[in-house]
Structures are given as C-alpha cells and as structure tokens.
Image (tube, rainbow over the protein chains, first blue to last red):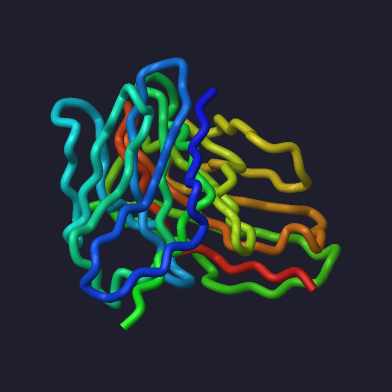
Length: 114
Length: 112
C-alpha cells in the first residue's frame, strides 16, 4: 500500500520569496506522483505530474517538482511566489498498475504574505 | 474537451435525512469515477471508485453508498445522514490507465 507524508501543514512565505513544499511517499511498487492545488471552496486542480522520464517536472503557474527515488521524495518548488499562490497544496501517489487509485497527503497550506 | 459537473454546490441537511449528490462527466467515455470527502482541515479520503457501469468499490465502511447507473454518471447517496457526514465532497474522473484525476468543484455538505 502507498502512503504520502506532507510534513508541513502550514507554510508562510513573503511575496517574491522562494518556497519549497515537502512531500515524501512510501510504496513497494513503481508509482506516479502528482501535485494538486486547491483554492477555497473549489475542487483540486492538477499542478504537475511525474509519470516517467526526466525527474524534474515543470507545471503550471511557475511551479516545478523533482522526483528523487532514493529519498522517495517529490518536493514542490517555486522560485518567486505571488499573493495568488495562497492555497492548499496536495501531494498524491498512485501505483503504475491498477485502477488509478490516488492516495493524498494531508495537504500544506501556503500563505503568501505581502 | 472533457468537463465534470457536480451539484449542488452547497447543501444543508438535518440529521436523519437522505442524501443524493450527482456527478456527470462529458467529453469522454468509460472513465474511472471517484468520490472523495475532505473534512475541515484534513486531507482527502477516498470513499468510492468505479471502473465501469454498476461496478463500485468501497474504500471506507460507512452509511454512504454510491451508484453508477450510466457510463458518465456517478451518484453518492445516504438513507440517513449523520452529523459526521458533514464535509466537502469531491467527484473526480480519470481516463483508464494511470492518467491524473480531474476534479469537480465540490459540494459543501453541512448536516445540522
């Protein structure tokens, strides 16, 4: 079975500063990895995904994430955040084989301070 | 392009009343369909998923049920709501074979 750990429940950061949101996973099989963003009272929107190939994945809104197999991590980064990046961010993992079951972390609340 | 519709957006129901939340997908066929619940300040909990018409898998035992009467329709139901059923319910779909999930805008359910 897979599991996802997002160690930071809340991350405050000043506008235009860099940010890293941490995600670690555990799985006994090969996985796909995802980051989603959720704005208040809305559904989740896909930021980026790692399926295979290059371990550095670029997504929407200037975000990127790096898959590190040895450390079982998939941290999300942005070099300069904006006020509009304030939202909840979820890391998720699914097996490469199976019925697309996605297991989510508990989320990280990113607050950008003007 | 594919779209997912989920309604209602908000719902206030008394304890013991029934529930029916509906989700439909357009622009794709034979999708995997999912119901998640997000409790306040917590992550997402997978409730049900379906890989085809009439095929429902339950992840968590509870007083909720799901049905898939048509290929692109997924319904979440309850005969008698509990206070603990309050939360944000999200429907999602994915193409078969490992693609990302695409979420609806959610239903905020408050059981009073």
